[in-house]
Image 1: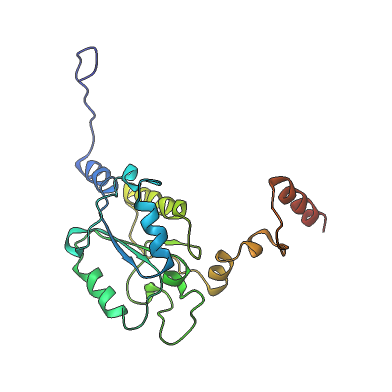
Image 2: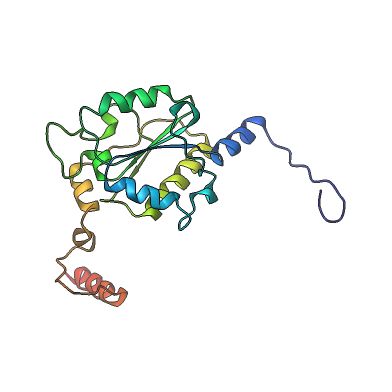
Length: 200
């Protein structure tokens, strides 16, 4: 009821209301195995406050979760366990691959490390970085919420290439030139470099 005493009525479809409820009540199942797991814990903590997005109810039982956050390196021996956890989650369920290792194997290009979790399950959102900053995970959850609200088909996201994963781990490649030690990059410096690149 509003302050003037009149009732408020929002006509909507039941399907839209269900999407809104799903979007704002994601229950994450964390699967942190290395440095990305520390960043995930930081995101859930009070500093970044994941509860602002309705995803603070962290569940360590797959039957009570609907969003799997895989953060870190997944070895071949872990793969069947991770797949079992995914299978035990109820539909609708979503998967976030957090970091270069869970997205593409990262720097571990070896026989014992899975080269991306999309080899064993569909992935909805990839978070680049090694490790990604907490804001990256927050943005991925907001992106996932938008996908849920739009009701778009759940086709797996495109897997990043090896070069994309390596570029995400290197700020040097992001700005397009080598950075010397003890050098502070300022916005003015970046604009100057962009002008130089445009002149070439």
